[in-house]
Image (cartoon, rainbow, N blue to C red):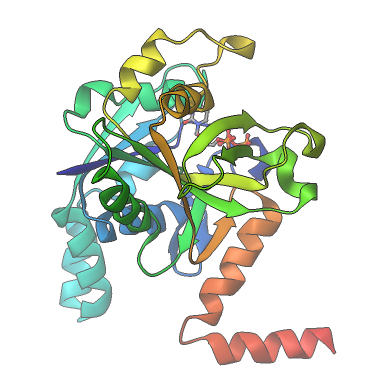
Length: 288
Ligand code: UTP
C-alpha cells in the first residue's frame, strides 16, 4: 500500500494577497484547484492513503475532498451527470486524512507530522504547489525508478525527482550532486546554493519517495537556521549511506506557488482543454 504525504501548511507568501484567506493550493488552474491535480497524481501513481499536513486556515482543502450530499443531489436531479461523476468519485474512492503542523518549522518538520499515520515504506511526498503533467504520472516515475534500483540494493532507498536548471535558477532549489559513472546515485544535496558553490545543475522538484526510516532521521537530526527541520538534511543522511537516487522528470512541471508559474500552468491546461482554440484566438487578438 502506497501512502503519500502532501504538505500544505506553508504560509504561501509569494501568492499574497490572493492566498490571504484562500489557501494557495485552492486557487484554480483551468477547472479545478491546484490541490486536486496533486491528489489525482497520487492516485494515478497507486496511492491509496493520502495525508495532508495542514495548518490554520487550510480547512477548505479538507472540505474540497469531503462528500457534498446537497451538491450531488442537485447535479443528479438536473442531469449534470458528468460533473456529478467527477465529484462523486473523488469524494468516495480515496482515503484522505489530515494532520496539523501547529508551527511552520520547515518541510522536514511537516513530513514528520505524518509519522504516526504511515506504517510501510517507501512513502511519497508531493509538494502541494508543484504541478507535474506527465505520462506516467510524476510520482509513478519515482516508483518505477525505485523498482529498478532497489533490486540491487540491500537497504531501502529514497528517490527524488530531478530536472536540470539554468545557472540563474540554481539558488532557488535544492541541488543534487551525482556520483559519476552511476545511474543517478546522489552523493550530496545542497539547499539553495549559489551557482559557484556546486557544479551540478540537477534541481530537486517537489516529489520524493522516501524509506520509512526517514522519520527517525528527521527526529534525530539537529535543527537548522530558525529552528527548522530541513528535509534536505535527511536526504543528505540517506545520500551519505549510498541510499539516495535521482529520477529525471519526463514531462512538464509548474511552480504554481509563483505568479509566473501559476499563469503558465493555467495557459498549459487551458490549451489542453476543449477551450484551446478560443484561448489561442484570444491570445492572437491581444498580441497583435
Ligand atoms: P514553500 O517554500 O513554497 O513555502 O514550501 P510556502 O510557505 O508554501 O510559500 P511561500 O514561499 O511563502 O510563497 C514548500 C512546500 O512545503 C510546505 C508548503 O505548504 C509547500 O507545499 N511547508 C513548508 C509546510 O507544509 N510546512 C512548513 O513548515 C514549510
